[in-house]
Image 1 (cartoon, rainbow, N blue to C red):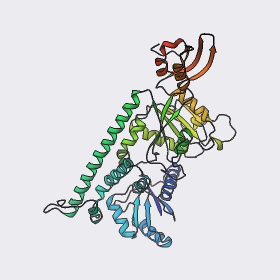
Image 2 (cartoon, rainbow, N blue to C red):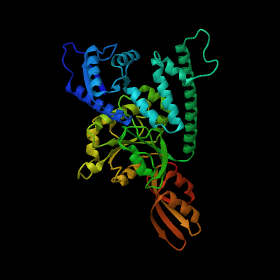
Image 3 (tube, rainbow, N blue to C red):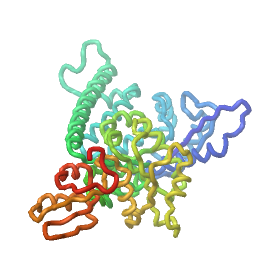
Image 4 (tube, helix red, strand yellow):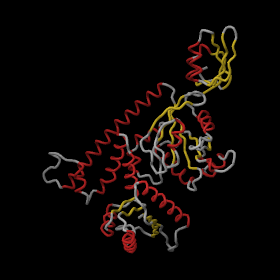
Length: 438
């Protein structure tokens, strides 16, 4: 069963606005999708609006009796609440209802634990779980005592609860040290990338917006892509070649969600740094979803929270094949989805990650917006013996024309700045957008 509780203080006892109830219904639908992803079957959902939250049970004694009857009728085994419960509220509800009670954060943590495949992902999930459980340790001493063991873990006069807390603190510190090493390794990798002009592009967006399908289409990778939320948890990095022949790294990251638990944001700092350090963000939006404006605002808020709001973005409007026959719906859609002018991206592109429609426009936009190793037009002069530099130009630039004569050839090309520097001895002239060092 799923339960959503909203609180609205009012001096006159008026009902909450329709917009608040609609938002609650949307959030409850999302909770049901999360529950299905975790393997649960939702028997019934319920929304309660209260002037004040009950500090003991969250919902009050009358709602507890109503829930008890619904649980008995459906023979339900779990109640999932679309809010964060205090330890006291969770214990009281479990005692009154005699079923397992989970809140939104616990449900998301459970999904993350199922999805983590790499060692880094597992470390991050365990850190988030322990950070969440530590203040809720009272009443779970027997279960927590299994987290550690061995001689010398319990001192004289120390209670079992204190011992369990100390073990969890020690484990949290150990996980944080391990993740600091991960951060160090990532920093080293980024330093190696920066030694050569290799841009990084991060795919961001609301969970289940089609990021992994787009990633597979761009890179040919075999990343899991299905309709379940958080289908991809561990980040994957692959390289792509742009129309200009520039090479770039593309990273598929974890999806965002409304009210993303703070423990997850902290624990996944090492992974989210891939987003913070990226040169360009592809913000993927499910363009046909009626929730697209809300989902986009949640992603923008999360990007601001982790310090990536200023990174250049391209708004990628996915599922354009279902939008009708409009020739280029991207500008109008972007204006509807991003009503705030301050949040308008550098550009918007309508695509279909499934059919591949719009991919050429997307790659061209990436080439235009990506600032690292900028591309400019130039003319090179090669003699008949300059085969190696001519081959380098063909491999790393977009050759637009070649004119041959008896002594060699003149080649016009759109060239990344790094390649232009390497071929500077052969540079005949610069046509457009000359680089600052020319």
